[in-house]
Image (cartoon, rainbow, N blue to C red):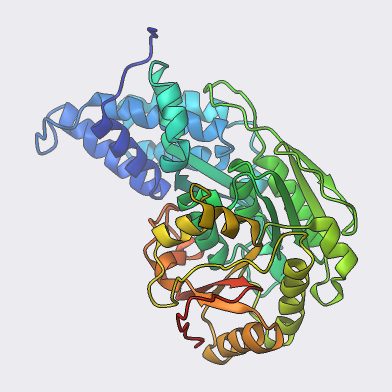
Length: 432
C-alpha cells in the first residue's frame, strides 16, 4: 500500500515525539535550530533535516485529531510570536498556518482559562506499548497513522487552583500514576468490570476507557464534579477523523448507584456515590472485579468512608473472595508480579482472576495521613493489604512533565493492593 505521506524513520518519529512533549516555546526553539542547520546557519549536524520538521507538523495534526487542539494552537501561537521577533522558524510559517487553521475552532476562553481559574489542559503521553497491535496492523498504512499510535493525549477541563472549590475538579498526581500503571499493566482492567472511586476530573477515567474494560463505572460525590467528569470523558471519546486515527467512540451515561451495571465496552457509566453510605445492595449492583482509588485519602476524616466503600464492594462483588491470592510480599512486588496477578494462563492465576481486588494509590503529603490510611485498611477494613509501591516506582513515565501540575513523577506516592482473602502459603507480609 502506497501513500503520498513520507515514511518517517524511527529516529525521526522519536525526535518529533520528543519535540511535542515539551512546552510550545521549546518546540519552536528546536524547530528554529533545525532550520538553521538546514540553511547552514547552525552547527552543521547532518542528522537534522527538514523531514523532522514535517514529522513535527504531522504530530501537531495528530494532536488536533486526538483532542489536543489547545496544545497545537499554543505551539502555533508561540511560532508566530517568534517570527514577529525575527528569531524563529520563518520558513515553516505556512505549514504552521495550516495547523492553526485546523485548531481555529478551539475557543480561546478554553485555552487561556478565565477569572475563576478553569482551564482545558491537554496531557500528552506516549502510548506505544498499549497501541502496539495498532502499529502492527497498520504498518503498511500512512506515516501519520503510525505517528498517531505513538502519541496520545487526554483533554480535561480542570481547576488550576487546587484550593478552589471541590477537590474533584483538580488533576491530582496519583491519578496520573494510576493511569500509567493501567497502561503498563492493561491486564488489570481489560475484560474486567472496573469501578473507580473519586474519579474527579476524569484523566484516569479517560485512559481506563481506552483500555476497553468489560464495564467501566466512574464515581464521585458532588453534582458539579460529576458534570465536569462526564464532560471530560465525552471530550476524549473520539472517532475516525482526518488523521485516520482508529475509532474508540463510547457512550457516557448517568446512572443511579443502585442500577445494575451493563457489561458493554462501548459505554462509560457515571454515578454519584457517597463512600460512607455504600450499601450491600449498591455493591451487588456494581459487582466489580477491580476497584481503583487514586488520591482519595487526602483527608483523614474521609478515610473511614473510603475503606467502608472498598470493603463493601469487595464483600458483595459476586466473585469468590476466598481464593488464595498468591505469595507476593510487600517488599518484592514488580510490574511483572502485578501482571501475573491478573493473567489467567495457568490454573492458579485463573483462581486469582476470580477474586476481586482494590488498588489504592495516594500521594504522601502528610505521613500521619498515610498511617491512618494503612491502619484503617488493615484493621477497620480487615483487608489483606500488599504494599506494591516498588512496582509503581519502576513504571515507565508516560506523561509529559512540562509544568508544575504535570510533574507527578516528583511526588512520593504509595500504592496498595487490597483483597478480602488472606495468603495461605506461610509468607509474612509486612503491614507498615
